[in-house]
Amino acid sequence: MTRAQPAWYEIRVAGALDDRWATWFNGLQVSGHGDETVIRGLLPDQPALHGLLTRVRDLGLDLICVRRLEMEGTGSDS
Image (cartoon, one colour):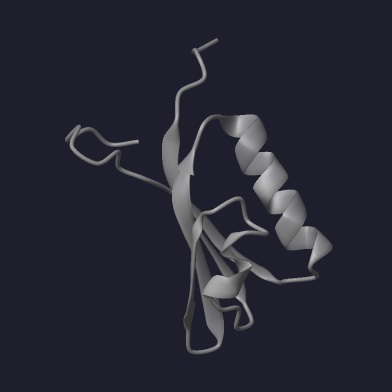
């Protein structure tokens, strides 16, 4: 089992949300791109990711994709 480490994530959902939703998503970056919304930011661990996905579900948004992004400045794949 590996130790929980922070990781950057990008979650794309169908529907247009604007940056006013950032507070509801714990300060993550929320930006609309046409008929999709991108929620992006650093999450401390997997339980935080699951909590974010629960919020997406609770809003009734259709999940398009979840990507773990390369940590900024590390040069390693995540």
